[in-house]
Each structure stands twice: as structure tokens, then as C-alpha cells.
Image: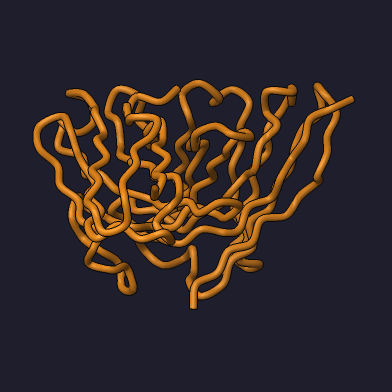
Length: 111
Length: 119
């Protein structure tokens, strides 16, 4: 049961900027829990893309950026490239479930 | 270098118990703050977090699956085991394990193992 809501799909032309939203509630983002983002290329395991709202692990291009405000979070991809075609998931903790929760997932298509 | 690898049966029958093993290297589950989580992904669907075990043997489970899951660790073998009872076709999925930091970041994932539930 996903308690974090994402748009099913977003698309953009190469070089453009796309933004993926992740809507939570008072029991996750609103309670102060961080958001993390994962990229899942076709047929591959998820890979950590952004942690603790806005931090990039070593090796992740600075084209990827994250933010969180109130009960929502977002991931931006600037200078969109063909290799960015993938599914993207947000993730956080939830106090009402006492567990981790993932978003519904967003497919990014490069036109 | 941190690596994790999932292993287990590719197919189980309905009502059977699934046992999956996560074998890892590059870190120790005896180190304070270290954790390992299990996550699954049904075909074409979203990720679902299942369970986590901590360095101090603390365990937490998905609320919806709590009655069916058991997670354990063998620190001498660098392994974490997940069992899921009463398997059903809706449990068909790719199952992943991931190292989890003390801040709740699932920072390194295994490649996953696919489990099909079918008679």
C-alpha cells in the first residue's frame, strides 16, 4: 500500500527539465522524515539517486536534484538525456506504519 | 566494496513457505548502525518494503505482512534470511535486499531474485 503518491509518467525532450512530485502526509514528510529517491533502469535493481532530501551519492550527476517542503517532495532532472529513461521512486519513513514506504513510481520518457 | 546477493527458489507452490537468503560483503551487521532491509516488486508494479533487521537484532516488519514474515541474521556468515509463510500468487515478485544505514537510507541493493508462486 503506497502512501506516497507520484505521477505515473512524465516526459520531456533531450535537454529539457522534468520534475517528479511525491506527495506524502503528516505521518511521513510532515513528521520530519527525509525523502530518498531511487532510479530503476529497465530490467535492473533500484539505485540510490538522492538521499536525505537533497544529497547526491558519489557518482550521481548534478543534473539530478531533490527538495522537500511540508508534506511534498520533488526530484528534478535538468538537461534530460536518453539514459535518464527509467522508473523513479521516492521513499521515506512513516510514523503511523512504523515502517518504510515507497512512492507509486514515475516513468520518465525522453521524447 | 559493498555487495549484496539474494538467493532462493525461483518457484514455490501456493500455501508453501518461502525462504530467501541475502549474502553480503563489504560491511558487517555487527557494526553499530548497520541494517539490512528486504523489498519486493511484483511484475510491472511499485516497490514494497517488507522488513528490516538491525545490528542489535532489532526487527521491524511491514504492517500488512507482519504475520507472515520473519527476518533473521547470521553474522558469522554475513547473511540475512527472510521467510514468508502461506505464499499466494499475489506474492509473485522480484525480491531485493538492501543495506540500510542508521539514517534509513537503502544505499546499496542486490540485483534481486525472482520468485513465482504457481501450482
